[in-house]
Amino acid sequence: MNKFFLILLFLMVGFLQAQTIFQLQVVNINTEDSERFEMVEKNYATPLANQAKKNGQIQDWYLMRKVNGGKASDQITYIWVHVYKGINQMLNAGSWWDTQSKFGVPSEVIYGSVERNPYGNFTYKTEKSFDTDRSGKYVIFNWAKPSNMPATLNLANEISDSFKSNMKKSGMTSWGMATRVYPQGEDFAPLFFWDGYENLDQALEHLMNKAVLEVVKPEMFEKLFALLPNGFSNRIIMEAITGTD
Image (cartoon, rainbow, N blue to C red; front, side):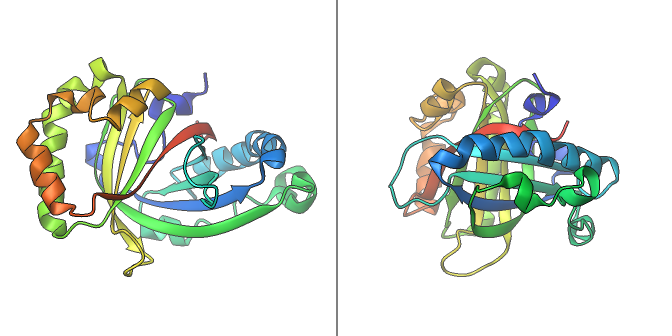
């Protein structure tokens, strides 16, 4: 198993590195092109990402695939996750994914007929994260529009402290919260959470307020729902496909 599965995702960098900047780059790939797309990402993009990490251009990089479910109109099929130590590293990362320099072949030739339809690039700042250093493959992405951001962050901090000791037992490999840096506006949820698990069963149980959440006091949920009057604006399960070592 590749090392990146041991630290599922960009974000899982620990509380002491809580100011990590990361970007979620959403792309839609037609089902018939998925196999070739993933092959290219594993055989070409991953070595380039590892070299960029070694060169200090990025902290980490990952490709996630959405687990089937939702509306047919939902354009999210894959998300590239670009992780940086800070704003300066992000702004100076360069086009490290260019295949011409390392492989002598342009990206458009390597991808062949695979049509990549980008649907946005979103930048976040990690506010807090836990990592267990255990193998995990699935992560729930959660977006929310709280009525009171400072109060929600404080409450989420309390909730995470209350379930931290239950992470290993429940199969949770990582957890974190982040705030949106750019773009900002009425159409963009400003708060983002992630919940990493070893397998899909555990991730689905989490969505039923089980798994790691079983130990959270009911009154904490009541406070959270009061701060999120419309609930989560979106929740999807992503599967790790490839990434940096």
